[in-house]
Length: 156
Image 1 (cartoon, rainbow, N blue to C red):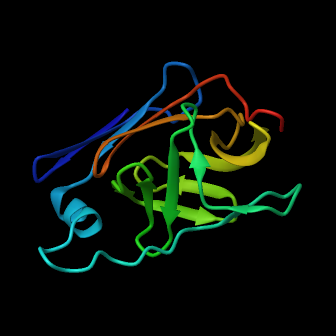
Image 2: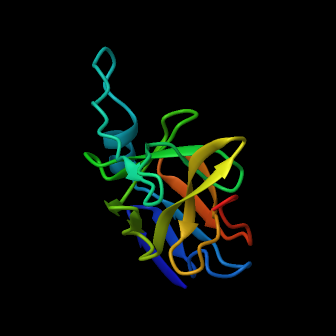
């Protein structure tokens, strides 16, 4: 476990998504949250450059990535952020390379994997090593929890 405090901000990192008891939790500092999640009154929000993930089996390209609860996130390459689709809340520090994901705050390795559900091909947020789908919770802009599950992408 690593703990860090700076300007009243805490970061706690436990082993990422590799066992049933592991969890990553982080809170971004207020300056990053302001940069990513809000704009001054009357200004236009920044353009998003969502990453497209490609299914190696079908060639289908998708931007929506589902977690264990089937909630959708997208990854903005311009701001290196995970964006919660339901409300636009960002969590910074995400690097994407092909279908691989790395969160700079945890060092955790994740991968977008594909499966079929409800008659359509879908992308899932999984741990890189085990391939199980992770449960994501974005509590507020910049606050993220990643928890493991035993579920693999359906119909993969």
